[in-house]
Image (tube, rainbow over all chains, first blue to last red; front, side):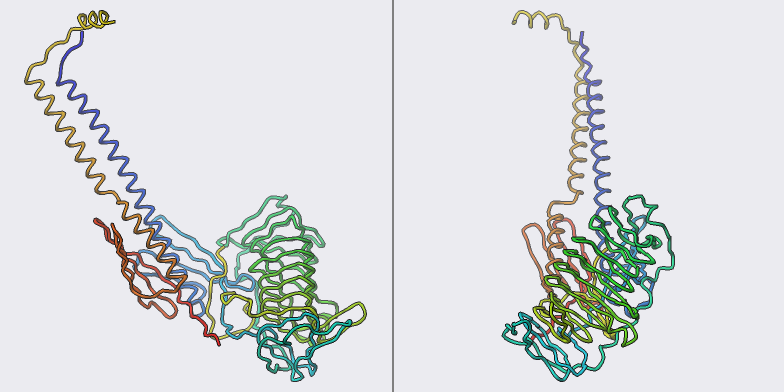
Length: 405
Length: 124
């Protein structure tokens, strides 16, 4: 028998409805708080971006660390500026209550406004160009200027010797700014390559720099290194194409990148840096050699290799400059500046500027000084917002973001 | 089948409720449902409306457009359910502050951005 007690049923229905209402309120409350948290994070990201812009815009005036604020005092960003190879490394930390946002990036200066494609020291010899050589942009050469060359039964095939204004250069190359330290991080951890046992290693720029020591003449294969890491050796390092290197520094007397290697590295060497066929050092990569020696000092870009960033080959003595050489082979490309206090052999393409003491050309039959045959220098093709190496000290430098790390 | 239903109904005895009891029950259920409706309406009202999200997306788009096309003019964008007002002020050398104020039926909010002013080189 079913009892018809309406009041009891009514209270029961009420309880169910209030349970439903209660759960609805709780769900809504959590969702609302979640949304507010999300909007707050959005605001934090905006404040971080704004403060980061303030830091890089004033990085010349500001010290190596400090604090900035934007709009209201809720979001404070603390920052540090240090060196990472050629570039400045900016690290910021924006926080609000328990939320903290870290941002690190490489920044570089864009002070250069002139469109110089070539600066060749005035050593009282003309520049001879032959074959399909193309120079686009202004040039500064010796007072003897530029002449068409006739080599191997081939004359100059272009329409104009230089597609730009020809000026007169000085006896020496423009003076480079001093590069004292490649990093300014005092905290360092050192390990041996063997300790990694093939495991990939990523190190944040907020942690101490890890120096990975490589045994003399050791080949590096099947390993991945990324971030705040320096690969260091007392002798040569051979890097195979199964290696992944991203944003790291390499410090060794000689470095060889295998065929078809791809990575982002800044190389600081003493003797030889070689990019084998098809190897690619992607932006922002660079090669730097500052050394005086009676032996050969060379940067070699083999056929179809590429480098985006820049090359600097320099030293103190003029005698050593005769041993310093940058060779850019056929179909090899450099995007950025090439500064060579020595000899440059150009058979490939440079999208940017070449600063060199002299050119050199070796054929099967002979050696020619100050000759370029079938090479190309194109300053106009370089994007306006390209941030190259900070070669020369300049009072007016605008800093721009190169890459977020 | 019909017979079966009829016989089962005969067996089920339903006790009648008093009039007062029924009235009270109806009153309690009505109050409960009206309160539930009120809660539901309040929840819907206090949530962020769709226009708010649309406006936020629009601001994100206008922000990117300002950076890419370097558009530093004050402007007002009026749409069906919301409006966005853009206001530009110089913040420091080389940086402009761009404020976007969004207005919907129930909410008004301002988002502040800093944008780098890219100087365009003069070409010959």
